[in-house]
Image 1: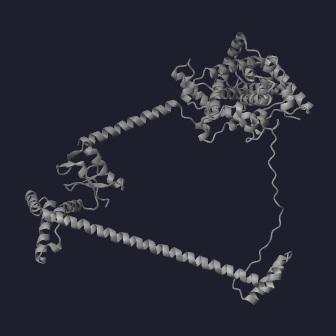
Image 2: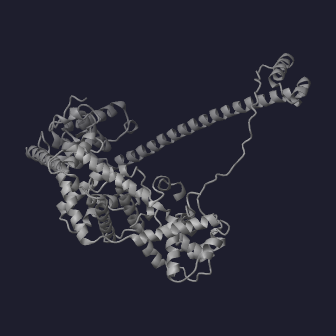
Image 3: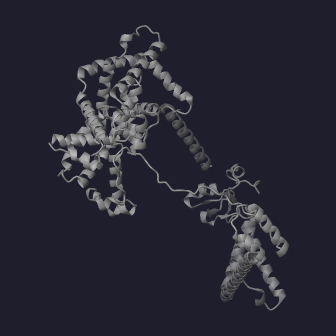
Length: 299
Length: 335
């Protein structure tokens, strides 16, 4: 694919594999950059065949051979006009003749053989079969719609299947949980275990092992219950942070308004309050700074 | 906050003697270094500056710094000025004016203070304020500033946050208005207190007392000037009724501060000129050592700043090569 270089700047196609080739109606290729540079005025002549071209006629190349691209374009245009279907013809022979006609036209246009005559023939055909063409166009759009509907339906069914799978999973999870719960209930109901559960476990390990053995023997549980080791530690006691400010105590931020400090600070404009600023903040900071370090530092 | 700041931990000293001791040590250090580095002819002990001459120069350049900040466009907030002055003072606590010329250090301090205090000025705007220089001269100054910036930060021990007494003064005024109705109009004290603070910034008060103490002294001073007695504020509102010892200590520090301010005298012009000449001579003499330092920075790698010339040449090269490429494309197109 990359052996084909841009005919103009040649080298840049190898260096830049992401560069795209563009094809025009004359079948010659140019890389994107060259198109930009040559067609900066909008229309110019082709580099190899000197036919007048327009920039808008350039399409990104999809096939290796630019002639294939050219033919694809021409075919699209021809089939817009020659759009009769198989049921339009009384017999297979005539349908095949019609198809051969179309192929001839496409071949002529692609290989620049007898272009004017072919075009004349196309126009003539178009004029004669105008209403047929219209009818078939409408049919075509209808078929496309049907296709889209089918696609939608398929998507929906996919979604449904996915939802069902999810629900199935959820049901399984729930069933598992119920099983666990049932197991625990069994344990609680078991009469030998009752005494063990009630007592304070100082020697928790021994008792829980005994408990485990008995349970496994009598109730034939298949689930293994590991004894949980209890860790005793000092209870956390919250002590608020003490900070030495070397100055008189500062009133709390919330008390500032009540104590009357805010009357002597510039009130916050609506613009400031939008960002979360309150006059209390500035006041609090000023008071903090005023009292911090006020008392002598040593002693 | 001030109470857990680096200023309180490292930059508040006990007495003026300690400060004087540090400055003498810096002076001595430079002398030793200069004598060791070059046993050149003409270098003699008498060339070096004495402590009082250094002081004169320091005060002179401090004034220049203040004037520069006051003439700055856009208007520099007071906290930036206070920070710059503090940086200047701290720098020359452990360095001598003979080693680093105060003219550049003063601008570097201001530049750094603008950055630290988030007073946003671009560097070109900053040097644009040096009206007596040509644009080329301004560029050179900017280069020097950028060279010395890291040194300044290092000598400040990377303690860049400076607490100024302006906000504590506002806080005290708010507190007075709220809790001390005996004083009718605290606003009238503001102007004199402001002047007091500006004067205090030119003394060592910032290195000896906390900013809130300086602010309180300013307010009490202006109150006593206006003939108002504010003793009850200290005892009642600040809760010092029982603590006689703390109260006496506070009065003591206030007295010390006032003496500091009284002792300050602006430098005399003739003294300044004489000392400046000698300073220039010292710098010219030991300029080689400072050049070595500059190169040392670049070799270190992390302070490598390309000189502007090389930058321009590089830019010119890029432009030339671009034009060549364009020509080549144009020629190709014409085919």
